Length: 375
Image (cartoon, rainbow, N blue to C red; front, side, top):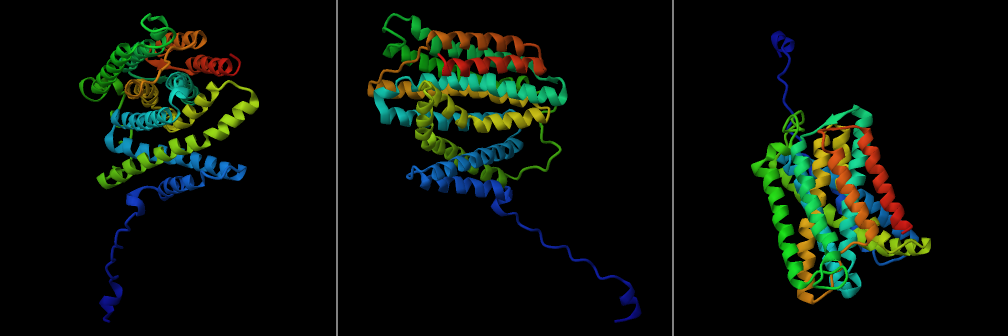
């Protein structure tokens, strides 16, 4: 080695890029998804320890679903990201309802009705109120594009009244039931309204469902197509785990509800809350990041998807199998539904939100829960 060679530092060799495991996804999210699916093998035993393990696995699956959904939302951009999560949750929730209907038959004639009203109350009151309270506390006042929220609420009010209220006032069938032709008509109308909402949100009037910068993740590293494909697969798997674990825990929930002496409808509220938890956590994180538009898109879109996809699916099953599908709500829930839709049109009709609107929706949801426990 010459003197000159000793003075000149050797050229640095760049280390080879480290390939991220799990296609770039966070290892904890991918491992949690797999473990939550493996936890389904513990469904057989009925001991308290096994039920606790299932509950822990359910919580992990919910958090993993939120992570995978946000990765996919980053890749797709808004409002496609929120729409993807709403559709994924609703499709699996619908599959759960249909599977229970096929298994229980006539004993499940009120299942769709109870699930729908619980989903509406959870999305429009619980999810909205938590997001507005957290967002208002942290950011004082938040703004959104009013046109998209208003049209979503108008569609939701139409679907809710046609599916859950009108059956009480038709005369072709006695009681809170639709005739076969009426049920088929409402199923078609539900699909038409929801399809119109999807086209408006994603194609024709996409700007009505955005606020500020179109890409809320512009400051983050872009998501590769491979990572997005992995996230979509993991999202579906984690949502399947959420639904199946919630279904597996339902006997324990039913036993607890019976031990407390609460009405059976509470079981549907608990299961609906578990299934909708991924959307709730995603909406909460968006509100904390001052993206209340995303939170409202999730809440209203989830409620619309629940009715627009569930009613056609369960209507087809009921018509093919000759099952009675009781859709009409009792008077107490009818009043709360009408009040929720009316108040939402006022609180979400200004383009700005504060904790005041959040408190109002919190009171409505608390009233719904209290009336369910003490009818």
